[in-house]
Length: 162
Image (cartoon, rainbow, N blue to C red; front, top):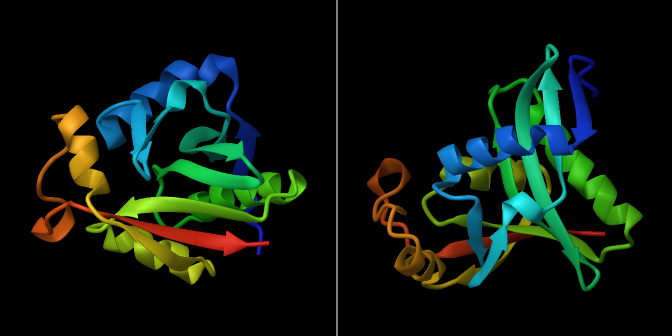
């Protein structure tokens, strides 16, 4: 089912400041660590979702070595299909680039993300023990406790194979 109220566009230069502010607000910093590797989201390709003609979400990703990693996904409008539309846009780019898989990591405390991705046929394929602890060593603003007061320590890797 396609939501006609959602429009997806590439992340254009004129929206980079907005994107950086959004990522910094939601992720502490535009620098994101995944699997012990740092990514500067200000340099990554991405997609912006518009809902009712307003920016309502953002996804950033990177394609390397025949794989696509979703680095960030943020929906500003809940339960309207924004997150799903962004995930589908990145999956489409992945397939178009002949990637073997699209994958992402999420913190061990992020139960909503785990639910969201698994409902969209992504599978948990790895646990990166201590990855959040390692990121916290470099980025002191990452909290010790996350959602539901769960200690944030590890990353869970999920994938969708093509």
